[in-house]
Image (cartoon, rainbow, N blue to C red):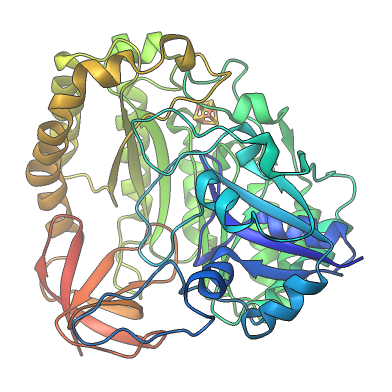
Length: 479
Ligand code: SF4
């Protein structure tokens, strides 16, 4: 029997597995198979199915085809691998759709279509078993049970850390640089979750032992990985072993280039923990706050995790300790804010509240790394599913205007403060072409997109200078 893992990429409120991130699912599954499986990406399968398996360099007038960019080392032998595969484990599931610069996760529709002629047992796993949706503002896609021989959850047993250790070597099948997403806990720290979120339904709350997390990182380090994000958890500040974990990583893996975190409940932010994160993690780090809304009516109706006052307090603490510019050109550690449109009780007043609180942050000279705004996805089983798309339908006509006003009047001035013209950003890795332009990012969490008006080598690192600001990106030149 030969097993192949097909990574169609995952994105959840707590955990990212879209390139350049390497998510936990392919690794744990690979580990549970004793490291005996082929690894393919959906990009490999798209190239094989639609392009005769011939990668094409984009002409000077073309965009990089990001649907086939992230190939594994097995791409060249894919025909042979698929012929010999008896079991295909398909990992998929987007629960928090975003915009991806250099990859596109597979939708269920695409996966069902692209795997339909493969002659093997097909097992669907990952977050997709709860549904998946690549576009905000919609209902989740449902699984067509006829397309798979089994739809089953894969559960990583925290008492069997060997699975994670063995799974690390899957990285040998990936030729490009990856940021390794590391798990410190699962489930939600709160008893009753937010109305839109599947995390409390997916997982009972559990912390992973810090020694286990460390051992996994050490294994990746041994294999050459140097970029990590402690991103698979609902709140990093809730982790009880922050100091032990971060100081041990620093000691045992001294040449780590990137160590970032993700997901923070603003209510849990303290000066002490912020100092630890600033001390041990690398610069450009972001605490993404799942604020979702500043409107108290919406906060209550959707059981969101914090009040606007908690957010401001947490922003002040992180700014106080993290605002200083690091050697890569970005502040060491800043907050980020996530907002969702389409929640229960959303009204015109919701926008006013969101705008006014964000304006206050700008006026108080506080920095945010970024503001993410997305439209809710309705997943079966969540509380939001009980009212469906009622508010999305009612308010959709305003979303462009609301979003644009925040982008123009808050985001842009914030970005100008964050990286004023003349700021040098170090080690920006070029990722895609768009006509004669090249777009790249630093390696790390929520990296700033930098565009340059010429073609530079993809995959190569450049030091660049900021010469202009776009709505969510900067224009740069090489220095
Ligand atoms: S705080 Fe809300 S969004 Fe975050 S994991 Fe818990 S339920 Fe999900």
